[in-house]
Amino acid sequence: MIRLVRSSTLREMNAQTVEMHNRASYQYGRAENLAVDVENAKVLLEEERTAACDMGENLLRSQDLVETLEKQLAAARDDLARAQGELDVLRPQHFLDTEDRAALRMLLRTARRQEARADRVYVLYRYGRVHSVHATRDAAEIAAEVEGADRDGWTSPIASDTAPPPNETAWRIQPLTLGSVK
Image 1 (cartoon, rainbow, N blue to C red):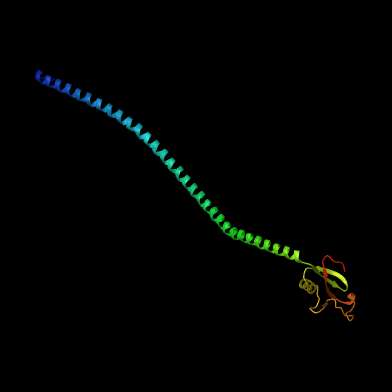
Image 2 (cartoon, rainbow, N blue to C red; image 1 turned 90 degrees about the horizontal axis):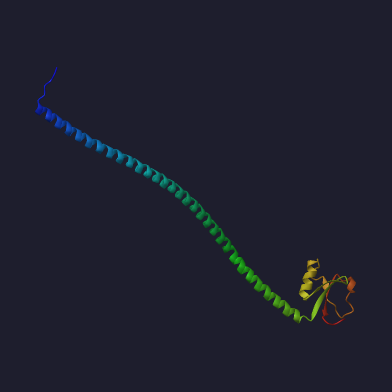
């Protein structure tokens, strides 16, 4: 079947075809522009993903660093507390050492003064033989007691003839003047 088309209808159809072709060309150009925009968006999205991954990795590294630093800080605080405890223990010891040194100096001065004043010594005899020599009579008595003498077990030389001979006396204390020979 053949169809007859009038020329005015044909013109209208051609005009519509041209208009449709123009619209299709416009839409095709627009679609190409959108495809380019989509590709650009994909590239930007990939860049943003990479940046986000980098930021995530940086965040994880930062968190690890914070944990490490917190551990080091805790260890440093422990060391500080331990050092403070040692200092608290050593400070009184230092003062005690200083006090001990001062007391020893005082005792040394006293001993030197007494040594300078000593004009005699006390000789402790046991059965007539020299046992020891002491600066004071009390020191000689204490030494005899330490060796087992009774408190009344020693004698001092007496001018009387009734004193037993020195080799028969268990303990005897005799003063001896320094610088003299008797």
